[in-house]
Length: 121
Image 1 (cartoon, rainbow, N blue to C red):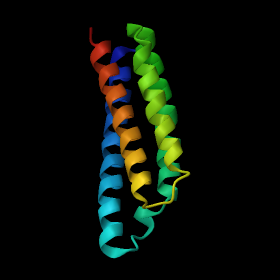
Image 2: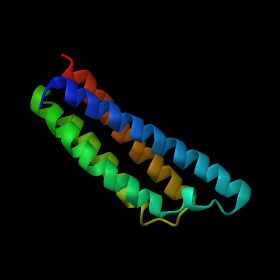
Image 3: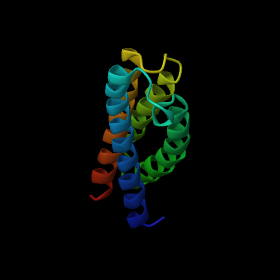
Image 4: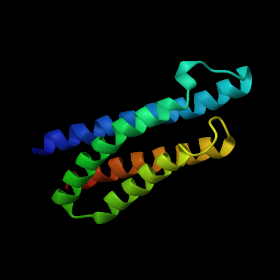
């Protein structure tokens, strides 16, 4: 896989992480304000997001580690995905769910950023 494709994967994953972060924060605010948020705020969106994030992260981070050899990048990504998965088992809209989701997305986004930077060496 060329470096350009790896860069595209990391940038796509960071964009997805940003969209997830917006969903988490805006969703929590909307749930607080309106008590019911519609399909966009449904808990199933987390499962879909995780189903998209997992293979994208696996390919992008695996490829990056193969290029630069920094296993910490992959470990940070695994921790982020793990937290995102953990949030599926917390009541939707609960403060803990928002915190765990945001932490997971932030860590995964940071892993992709670190991966992108390390791959440009």
